[in-house]
Image (cartoon, rainbow, N blue to C red; front, side, top):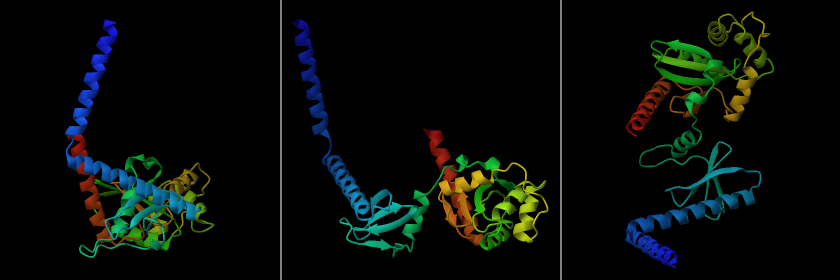
Length: 267
């Protein structure tokens, strides 16, 4: 009997404390929590409605934006926009008129970011210039004209390490060229001969290569355009970037990595 009484008293005390803690929460906290619940429900509704109306679309994420009530829909490495009832789809970019920032491009970079050190860097052709302190990884096809232009700018950068992943997807002989370059005694020279001087190596692509694995990796990472460059902060940019753009992104990526490291050290 005493044991039962003790348990009942403990339960009364527990629920009294729980009620007090709940009621002591500030109105602002309660309001923020309520808003978050409503937002999450609305985003889930939009996701379901998009997939119902467009069953071929696999929606990965829906986020309400701060622009005219639009909802950002991320699907298949692309972003499009709609309203809360999915009465329309808006394809294209949102640009902030005040800052002139390409909001869509910035969001896409965040949503498609990877962990740089998860890349199989040992399966790349490595180019080091200067100290090699700043790192980047590039998916390129040996037949890609834009990649060849990109390589010219790449070889003018200082203090950079570029991990080049042969990604032969353009032409029937792209795979043969990639494997021949990999099997060369000097892979970097063979690669640069092909990309900068238009000279194909005489080596035969009969050795064991990781090229098939790299193609599978590129597909997994949804690399659809080449060249595609991954920077050390995990963000990617597709296309043959001008030297100034590469340099600017290398700087911001290095700062982001340093900032993340400082935060981890203080935890």
